[in-house]
Length: 157
Image (tube, rainbow, N blue to C red; front, side, top):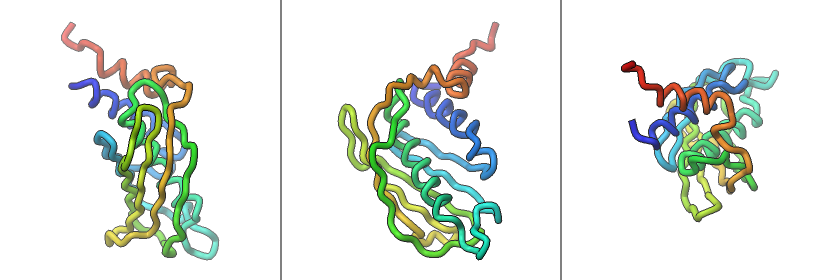
């Protein structure tokens, strides 16, 4: 397995270990500069009057954007400097996918475009975000480090 694939699997382990990953049970697809997070939205994601909470939509867009940017940064965790997202169509309990792509990058900065789709592949919302490197080494974060070490283990001995 390549270093890049190991990095993507370690990012996936890091994300799935988070509290948000636990309650929504996301499916992740990572490639260099691209991330798709798909989830089945449950009643817990909805407001008392029915539609899905805007904070859930925001978090899905932000999570996939951060992962897309971090697929291109292999040593430090990226941090979001700015995030914008559009008004969106009302959304009820269904399966959604937040797809993010790095649209521009330089040595220290990434611009990411994100779109949230419902299960009929209708665009629900979009976001644009700007990321830079943080001071946090990825290999100091336990879920990332543990997965990376597990992938590097020589099981033939």
